[in-house]
Amino acid sequence: MKRLHLVGIITLLLIALMAVGIGPVMAQDGDKEFQKIEAPLSTEADSLVHKIPRGSVVYHLPNGITEVRGLNNELVFKARDNEASLVITPFGPQRATHVFEVQNGSLIDESAGDEITRIYKDDVLVLTVVNKDKGSRVPAPAMGDRWIEWAEDETVSELEYFDADWEVPADPRSPGATTIVFLFNGIEPNAGGEIIQPVLEWNSGNWFGRSWYVWGDGPNDYYRSSYINVDGDHEVRGTMEYGEVYANFWYVEFYNIDEDESTGFYTNGISNQNLRVYVTLEEGQYVDDDDDITGDTLFHNMSFKDSSGSPVAISWVDQEDPYDNYTFLSNLNVYDVGQDNVYLHTDN
Image (tube, rainbow, N blue to C red):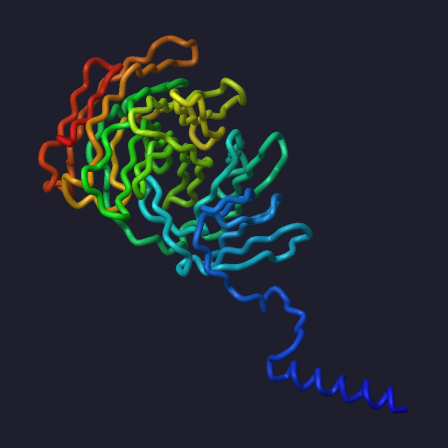
């Protein structure tokens, strides 16, 4: 009788504690607290990402909430997109819930349409992203057009290969602590809205490289490969090659020639028809004067080929700060020497 009486008292205490919000509560999906996501999502552990389980499905919902679900549809977490930290990308600052880091050699498959992206590694599905918020998303704070200077050809009817070499330029003379600068060669559809690009980045006093793929009207999501370190004066190469390993997929690779190290992925997000090509110097963040800008860059040994392996003729159009965002920079000039070499001058 005493034992039963004690059990009854404990049961009543637990009920009372639960009523005031103290004690063990079996949370349902709707009861889970929102997390603030401060780094890109990835299925691999890294100090610069927010790790999620392999095989996860990420749902971007029309109410501005991102849910991540694991095995058996179990809720891993949910997050409000407008509370997520901003990640600096070559497409401006974007919410961390919409930036994904994929393993080197991953395959980014858009064949299911503009709502579903599947990421494979070694033929294993490791991540699915479902966009239910297309057209309803509140965008990240706009930076405006932050391409500083570049050369372009917007009239490429067919292309299956584009690579370019360039030497890591001089560091900014006296950059701010959070200055970020990008250098890359890239390909877009002629209609815009998407881009593939192997990118060299100056960030917090260091150089490193990775490949990027941005897609969708809005745009929607931002995919990057894991980074590799690069030292000053290293020679690097950006390569984009169509259909060599997987039919209808571009291989996008950033390669450190001096260290024989590369990082990239495959994507079928854009076709090989009706394209624009670029070599570009871009502000990522906080370029306020000449001391924040990197040195001159010569993109050279560039090669452009069609499906037969024949050279594709490129007619460069030079662009130096056409939107007057960088009138405080003293001497921007773009020089193209044939189609194989483009020199981006910064007067640093």
